[in-house]
Image (tube, rainbow, N blue to C red):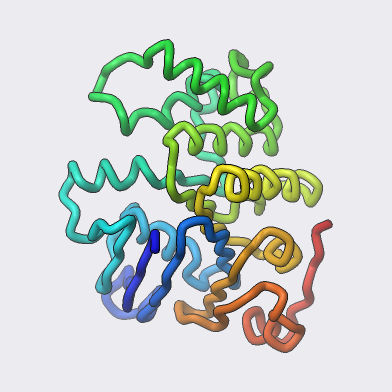
Length: 249
């Protein structure tokens, strides 16, 4: 068991719960899809896992480590094993593609230390994995949205992570590009054995790439199971009775 979450709750204002007693277990090699409306708690859950935000209560265990009890040094060691991919890429646009990818190695370096030739070679290998080796020395701002998200994937891969958290990584992309980004994540999962937790809005992508689904609604679990078992009624239970499924092929 790579990740175990028990009775996790989060309140931002001390009154309303954004997450309510969420329990979840993720095995090494899983590709878990988080589904739900915007505001359902998907991003909050992802950010609690690596403590980008502090949970209000509950327990999180990652690879045998108590995440919530970890001090600064222990948390640094945990975080470098957890790659994070964001909807808006979170890249430094005026820096080169290679430099952005190299920042994924910061968790392995002392502050202000320089990147080694081995780091730079590794960055080029990661860029090759996402088909961007020829763009290594270009500034990120010159790349398309899909290319920037591939840079973000390469940056996460630089951490040599056991887990990748992807927070709506295709929400800003057109359908064809969205599917290609999911293909890269699927390859890291199937070929490299990296566990992936990915929040999405598209059930068609969940069916295509996910091994399991956790759906949230108003901060509680609305569905837990296989993507293929989400029929029309379960879809409406998650997204509302007026919701219609949009497919990405």
